[in-house]
Every structure is written in C-alpha cells, then in structure tokens.
Amino acid sequence: MIIDIHSHIYPRRYLDILAERTEIPRLEVDQDGEHFIMFPDEKRITGGTRAIGEDYTSVEKKIFFMDQSGIDVSVISLGNPWVDFFEKKEAAWWASSLNEEIESICSTNDRLEGLGVVPLQDISAACDEIKRVVRLSHIHGIIMGTRPGNMHLDHTDLDPFWEAAQRDNVPIFIHPHYIVGAEWMAGYGHAMLIALGFPFETTAAVTRLILGGVLERHPDITLILAHSGGALPFLSGRLDVCTQVDGRSSRNLEMPFSRYLKKLYYDAVAYNRSNLLCTLDLVGPGRVFFGTDHPFGIANPTACKKAIQEATSSEEQASAILGDNAKSWLEGAMG
Image (tube, rainbow, N blue to C red; front, side, top):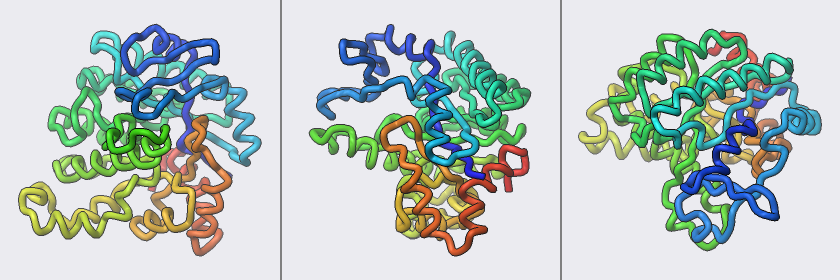
C-alpha cells in the first residue's frame, strides 16, 4: 500500500474568499484564469504569478492523479496559507467549517483521509478546535504554518496549543509559507522561493522551536516536518556544535540538538537518494512518510519513489516509508 501524507486541496469557497481580497494572500482572476499571489511583493520578486487549475479543487482530479501515480490513499489537507489571514473573529468559524468540509470529502471516498486546521490567532479557540477534531473520524492531525498568529513557534503563548495537541495525541504537520530570504531570490521566477525559501523557513522555524524548549515542555507531542525537514537533517551536526558552544542557545536544552530532531517525523519529499539519505541517517525509516505535494507543479511521485527505493536497504524499509508508517498513523498506532 502506498499512502501520500502530503497532498493539498483548496475548497472552492476558500478560493472565492481569496479572490475577493485586495491584500496578500489573494487570488488574481483574469482572462488567463486564476493565479495565486501568496507572498509579499511576489510579482516583483518572481516576475509573475502561479497559475492554478481544477487540480487544486477537484476530488476527481485528485483521484485521477492517485491512479496515475499508483497511490492507494492520500491524506489531504488545506494548502497554505490555511486560515492564517483571517481576522480573529472569523478564523475560528472558518477553521471549523473547513475541517467539516475535509471530513465530508473523506467520508464519501474511502481513498482519502484528512488533516485539519486551527485558528491560531486565538489560542483558546485553537485548543477548542483540537477537541472537536479528535471527534472527526477522518481527520488525523493538524496542518499549520511556521508563523501562527504572527508568532514564531517558540513563543510561549503557543504552549496551551502544544499541550492540547499532546494531551489529545493529535499530530501536527508543520509546513512553510512565509519564506526565508526572499530578497536574495529575486529575478528567477518561483524556483528559488520554493526550492530554497520554503526549506530554509522550516529549518529556521523548527530550530527556534527546539531552542525555545518546546520539546522539553511538551515531550510527547508528535510533529511531522514537510519537505523532509528542510535543511535540518543535513545541518544537524553543525547545529549540535554551534548550540553546544553557545550557552545562550542551549539554555533550554537537556540533550544535544540533534537528539530532538530524532524525536520528529518527516515526509520523504526529497526527490533524490542523497537528500533522503540525510533524513534516513538521522531518524531511520520508521519516522519517514511518502508524500507528493500534489497538486503543485513540484509533485513528482516517480522521483520520490525512486529515491525511497535507492536510499533504503530492504523492501521492508521501503514499504515502511511508502505506506506502512502512515497506515499505523491512520490506525492510531503511530510508532
């Protein structure tokens, strides 16, 4: 069984809200169709926008992609920017409503499961939504960005949310959106923003989370990192050394930095053997899940499957990443 844990969908009414906006994030509609404008100063930096089509909204197109790619089950989630841009008074309603919509989609298709969203502009409402989500039979975790409520992940105001997720055993999938170093990447379309800015963002955000002591205060929380953890697996040794020689960095840590990285889970959206090996060398195949990032253009299930086959030493290890680990998660037995 092959299970894709990193697969997005944008309900039509969500895109309609983006199309009504004049501020970023928004959806631009012209004679050429619909285009995302998600990042500050995006047109100047990239020279254009990203066109989107029916693949972004259609369950039928999702299933077609799965059939073409040999994927048995997809765990679908709202794509970035989730409910981050809503005003506080609207965010809670939209989170609950979108979670119900994902639940409804999955309940009518036995090849789909889901992740929910929470309104982290309002920590109390987010904790309440965690309680609701655990009662939805097809929602198996939460997807969130790296700057919820415009806070870094180490901000202590988020502690009640982390505690709620830990208490109810709700996995949190951390996905980038805000980009680190965008000004360094101007002039070359979206490639640098997505290939570098996204993983750099995950790397910086999760490093702050660890240095801030979040995993010490909430040791049993389950975190899954998009895009194979960004640069964290490759830089784990450097992070060990740099934090050990700077007491201001390590004051909240009870063990070497990389030991915290070993407590996390990662998707396998790495595209080649060398990149995926960094993640597997860090945590082993038991903490890695197959993903595609569909419907975005970077979805390449063939490359990701090939990387898994080449980076593992046995069919058992490959099967764990391709589906067995996710199956255990969906059945409530995440190891």
